[in-house]
Amino acid sequence: MNAPSTKWLLAWALCLLIMNFTLCLSVLIFVYYWSRFHFGLYVLPYRPLNARDAWIAQHGPNHRESTFHNGLKWT
Image (tube, rainbow, N blue to C red; front, top):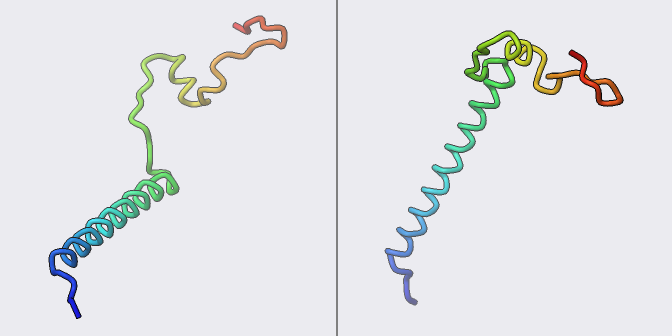
């Protein structure tokens, strides 16, 4: 019976080792960022430069300007 060559066993072992390392690293990175976001520690490095940008930072980007139903801008 022919035994498999050692180079193929080493190649598969190296491939599985790389895959395992990549998977573990990606899981660790995901858990790190998820936990920071979940516990409120993830803050974007954003500093508003004027009052308008500060208001947008407080109230969100979807409320930049209010409009009437006919399209006239509320100033």
